[in-house]
Every structure is written in C-alpha cells, then in structure tokens.
Amino acid sequence: MKNAKYPEQIDLLPYIGKWLVLSLIVAALAGTASAFFFFSLEWATAWRESHPWIIWLLPVAGFTVGWIYLRLGKSVEAGNNLLIDEIHDPKKVIPLRMAPLVLGGTIISHLFGASVGREGTAVQMGGALADQLTHVFRMDQQKRRLLIMAGISAGFASVFGTPLAGAIFGLEVLAIGRMRYDAILPCFIAAIVADQVGVLWGIHHTHYAVSLVPQITAWTLSATLIAGMLFGLVGMLFANATHGLSDYMKTHVRYAPLRPFIGGVVVAVAVWIVGSQRYIGLGIPTIVEAFQQPLSAWNFVGKMAFTIASLGSGFKGGEVTPLFYIGATLGNALAPLLQLPFSTLAAIGFVAVFAGAANTPIASTIMAIELFGPAIGPYAGIACVVSYLFSGHTGIYRAQRVGNAKHQRHVPLDMKLGELPAYRQKSRHDAKTDLPTE
Image (cartoon, rainbow, N blue to C red; front, side, top):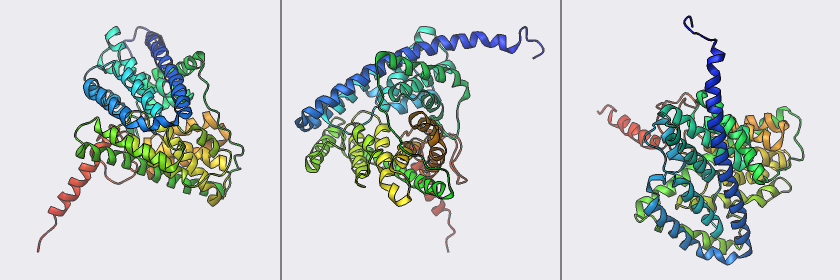
C-alpha cells in the first residue's frame, strides 16, 4: 500500500500480540475445564463399573437431566449446533450456563450408563467459556466469531490430546468444503496450549498401538478405498438414525423430560438382555481390544444401536468417541475380508467413520497421524476423504453449512444440513407438479 507508514509485518505485531493473549486465556479456561471433566468421567465410569445395578436408575437420571434443561437450559439445549450458528450468524453471547449444564448432564449420563461420548461436552464448555470474553474485552461480532472457534479447537484438542487435529477441527467443522483462515492463529494457539494445560493438570490419554502398517501396494490402496466407502455409509447411517430418532421423539413425546426417561428404560433393558456393559459409556477398553485381536463383527452394530438410542432420546454427551468405537470395531471386522492387519484397519476406521459423520476429513487425517504415527497417514487420508464423500450431505451437526458441495449434484450453498431434507422434499414436489399433463 502506497500510504502505509510501516511495513505490513510491523502492523501485524499488535494483531498477533492481542490474539496470543486472548488465545492463551481461552486455552487456560478450556484446558482446565476439560481436565476437570476428564477426571470426573474417570470417576463416573469406575463407579458405574463397580456398581452395575445403577443402570436401572438410568431412566430417572435421564428424566432429571431433561427436567433441568427444560427449566434452565432451553437457551443452550442446541449444544454444538448453537456454537456453529453463533459463528455463522452471531446474535448474542452464549449463556455461561451452557458449561455447567452440559458438564453435569454428561457426567450423569456416564454414571448411570448411557452410551454417549465426550467431545460435545468439551467443545461446548470451550466455546461457552471463550465467548464470555466478549463481555470482558468488548469484542465486536467478527472477533467474537474467532473467540468461539478458538474455544471449540481448545476443547476438542484438550479432551483427545490431539492439538493439531483440534485446531483444524475448529476451522473445518463450520461448513462443508470451506474453512475460515482468519481464525487460524487463535485456533492453533488455543488448541496447542489447551492440550498442554490438560497435561499439566495430569491428563493421561489412551495409547492405541498400531502393530503393523503395510507397505503401499495396489491392493492395500484399493482395500483402503473400499473400506472408506463403507466407513462413510456407516457414518451417514449413524447421523441419519440419530436425527431421525430425535425428531420422532420430539414429535410423539411432547414433554421433554420423558424422552430420556423412555430412552433410559430401553438402554437399561437392553443392557440386561445383553448381559454386559460393553456397549455403554465411552467403551475405551473395547476400542483398545480392536487394535489387538479379532473381535465379533457385531460390536459396531451394538455400539451404534446403544448410542443412537441414548443420543436420539436426549441424553447429553458427544458423538465422537462412540464413532471411534464404531469405526475401530468395524475396521477390525473388515480386516480379514480386505486382507489388512487388524490394527491398521482399526486405526483407519477409528478416524474415517468420524470423518464421514462430522464432515471433517482433514482434521480426522491429522488426528490419525497424531494418535498412530505418520506411517498411517496415506491410508488414513484416503479413507477419510472417501468416507467424507460417501457420507453425502448429511452429518451429526445439523447447523453445519454447505460451503461447497461434495460433488456436482446441486445443493444450495450456505444452507444448513438440517434444512436439506425439507428442501429436497420440496424440490421433488415441485418437480412433480411441473410435469406436463396429457
């Protein structure tokens, strides 16, 4: 610029300094909240496993959380979707109550035996806590967007121990096929530092050992391509079934607290019939087993059913860890058919089903490298991208926008994924009414 008094790099220094300070604050808040959540989850899981009878109180626990949200949490009930909506169309600061409500609701879900995850809770706490800085520093709407994105990245990174994947997740999750690079600095700083804050608090993340990554050949790439297609279809099925059950419950059960009560009855009875807690909670031990030995092909089906029943009926928690379980056990089941090592395909499935369901192929690929090592990268990259394509324009986050369509089929840009079914139905109806009559 002709009239610039200083070089661009000099003008950039105050910007970097400001976002460094803000991102460090976000990281400290999100990392500390995730650490408290992490240790609370460990306690809840251990208590449930040593007192298996508590599963029969799951309906009461579900009703209680549903009643609390009905009385106090209507403004934050949308969870992750509220964060995405506020980034795309900022209106008002996210109520601070989101953090304690989702924290308490998720701990109760795990304590009494629902099949839910933890990503949603960490992301919501990170986003809600970060947005409180809007008041403190009098941020405008544009800067507020970046704060929330940094909070999302920090929450994701600290709860999974994957700082780079967390940073990219905060950038990638907002819209299919489009990322906001104006938030790249705060997202990366917040994610990396939040992960270290968690480590300082004493968080120890699960180690998944991939014993063998085969050399790249025509067959291993072809097998990975086939697996990626299946992973994407399973991710699509999971998202559609969870949303479908949620819509059905909201239509037929008008009183909100009764929905998780009914879901709790179904899950508790199912646990009694199965005779095992294998499909409830996070399921980390089963995920670890998928990397070590052949498992029953029904594991991923069981986890899908229990998680869809839990989340679809209104229990609080996340979708991602159950998706890791589903992907790892599905990969384990496919390994003999595709002639790949169990641990390799379990690792690929671990990230690829998540990539398809969340529409985050880049973050998922980076997560694979962070968790399993760089050798898995080429396989994870192919599987995640193919899964992302084969999951279609669906996803676990209904507020996600269509930034760029996945393929040439017409999809309106900037439309929410949750609005696409109604749009398609209307388009089909309009096409029929426009047909010429004889």
